[in-house]
Image 1 (cartoon, rainbow, N blue to C red):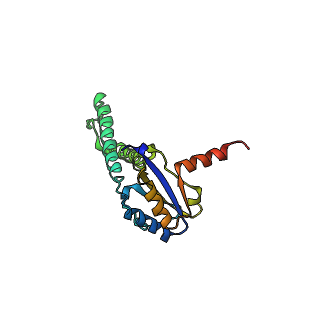
Image 2: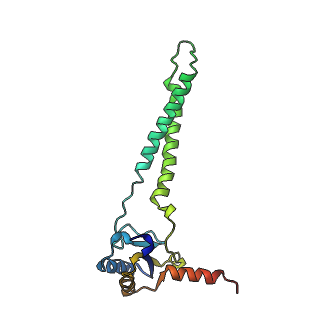
Image 3: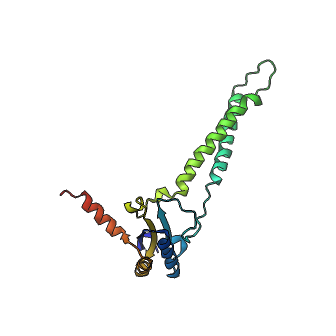
Amino acid sequence: MGAKDRTELLGLYEGPDAAADAVEGLKDADFDGTAIEVLSATPYPEGAFGEQHIKHRLFTFPFAGAACGLAIGLAWVIGAQISLPIVTGGKPIVAFPAVIQILYEGTMLGAVLFTVIGVFFESRLPDGVGLYDERIADGYIGISVLATSDQTDAARSALNGAGAVDIVTADDAASATASATSPA
């Protein structure tokens, strides 16, 4: 089943207790934890609504970037000194004290660049943004669920059963955007 066979529903709640009840109701309706997402402008602790813990691998990106930066720095500095060997007063061609700062900078640059790439990767930004309602910024809590066509009624029932203020779908969001941009 592809992504086009799924519909996203966004239930809006005024308080955290109702939002937690909605997550519990969706789990009772046999929705997978990966299909449920909590949206809030308030930084609640992870798992406060009973949602599934999201595993990430962001911590691996700086280590990989540091290793790549160090390798590139070594290749660059040693390669440059070996390609044009200038012996000065009997000193070694590759002098470690002269190389250490360049290696440090290359390592840090690689770690920072890979961390930025990792943030984009782990944030799923290339996939686009799902449903969002501006009332979430005003303090409401949104519970987003991806439902197949045969699960849509069960999702809507679970969201309403927890006391949703409003339930928004992609069709509702598209018609609201179209009416807001049409000339009066």
